[in-house]
Amino acid sequence: MTQKIIDIHPHIISPDTGRYPYNPLGGVRSDWSAERPFPFEQYVTEMEAAGVAQAAMVQSATTYGYDNSYAADSVCRDPARFVGVYTVDVAAPDAVATIDMWRGRGMVGLRLFGAGSTVQSDGRWMIAPETVPVWEHMAAIDMPVCIQTTSIGLPVVEEILGRFPGVRIILDHLGRPDLTDGAPYEKAAPLWALARFANLYLKVTPRTFDLSEKVPATPETFFPKLVAEYGAGRLAWGSNFPANDGTLKDLVDQGHRCFAALSEDDRAAIWAGTAEKLYPQLLQASKTERAIA
Image (tube, rainbow, N blue to C red; front, top):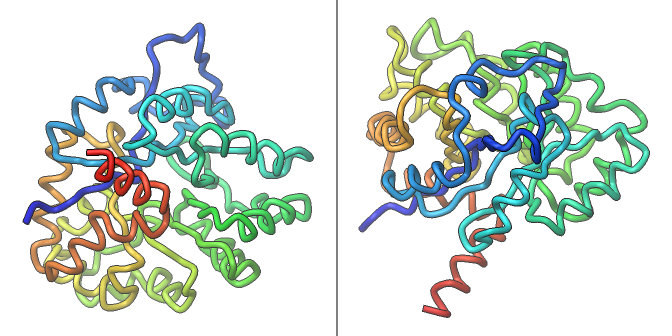
C-alpha cells in the first residue's frame, strides 16, 4: 500500500517583491530564504515528484513577518490540498480579530517564532498578560499553535502547556534536542520531560533526521525511543523545505530511511495520520475530493 504523506512544514517565497514585500521578524532574513526562494508553483512541482499528497504551508516569518498574504493567496488556490499556518502578533490589541480574518483565508494553525537562526529569545513574550485572549481563543476554536524555539525557550513552552491545557502545542523540530551522547539520549532529558503533557505534539523534520544520523546517535535507536516516549499519534512530519538542502524527494527519502525501524502503523501516523488529527481540514478535503471523484 502506498504511504500517504502530508507535509506540515514547507515554506514558500514569492519572486514578486512589489506585491509581497519582505519584512522579516527581527529585521534579518534567514540565509535559506535569500538563497533558495522557492515560490508556490515550484513547491507543487516538488511535492508531486516526492509523492506528497497535501501540505500545511507555514508562513516564512523570517521573510514576511506578520504579513501572511503570500501563503494565504497560495493555499486558497487549491484548498483540497493546502491549508495555512500563519504568524500573528499575539500581543496586539486586535490579535483575536486578526486570527479570525486569516481563518477565512485558509489559516488552520498559528505559529509563534521564539528562537531560531535569526531571532533568539526565551519566548516569554508569548505569555505576557496581553496574549491571554489569544490563548483562550485558540482553545475555544481548537486551533493548534506551533512554537519555533531552541532549548532556551523550553521553560516557557512548559509553562504554556501547563497554563493552557486546552491548546494543542506543536513543537517545531522537537525543540532541537541534544542527541550528541547517543542512546539512551540522556542529554535530551528536557524533551523527554515534556512528554507528560498530553497537549504537546512534536514536528519531526530533516533537522531531526540530521541530528539522529550523527554518530553516536542513530535513527534505529532514536526514533523508537521517541515513539515510546510520546506515541506516534503525537508525532508529525514536516519537510522544512527549502530551508534544508536537497529536493523535497530527497527529504522524503531521508525520512523513509530514518523511520525504517518503526512499525507500519507508526510510520503511517507520522507521515499523515497525526497531521490529519491536528489539521482535520486536510482530512475533510481528502474525503470531499474522493466523493467528487
